[in-house]
Length: 290
Image 1 (cartoon, rainbow, N blue to C red):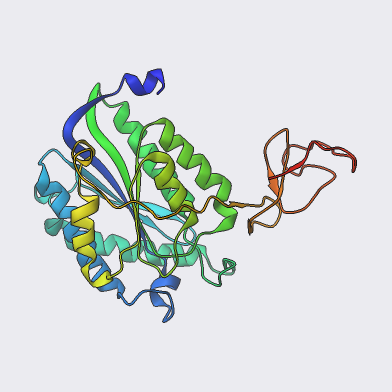
Image 2 (cartoon, one colour):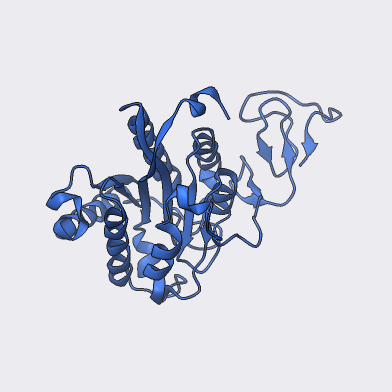
């Protein structure tokens, strides 16, 4: 625990929840996207969850960030919303902003081709995590006492190996700031990135078996404030995938080579590190198998 972490003064039972919602149209439109849950039904369960967070404590603070394929953006902030901060009063505004975001994200992606090794299109998780952490840091600097922050990721798209470094940097930043990252997976496959994020930061990782009851999972598991979690037995992941992505081909690997200078990871031996420029003769053993 760092000195900066020790100096933080939290308000008991008051939460700042930054919700990252996967708005990837490729995932939601795909017939084999791994979910039987239509996007409209998904939103009809997420928005009441946001409202329930505000109803649990009138001082709770909820922020919604949309995660697209090429961009991410703030969609809703309960501190700025109308109707006393309750989501139903501004539901149409949220839906309107989501429509605008999807259209803008689509224009940014014209002419590009981003496909993950699994065949799906990854969302910009690294960007939304960075936006969430920046927002939380602003709250930290706003006063001596503030709500306990946490990030909740609702993710369906596959991991993007090209984002490995950026995602891990965000995870370690969250760990240093003592910000748990909760993960709820609505796709067919687990997320190695979010498994590591929840494990390292002390958050909750869950892949619901019945998506029709998504709101029940969200309300029972992810609505719990950090103060109450010490009294509850929340789900724990059976295993965590700690595999890394190589810096050369952006692929997930089981074994590879690590640069002893900058710790970059490669799937095969290189004479020169492409990250820091260190040169390694063939006989040099400074690059070791990971």
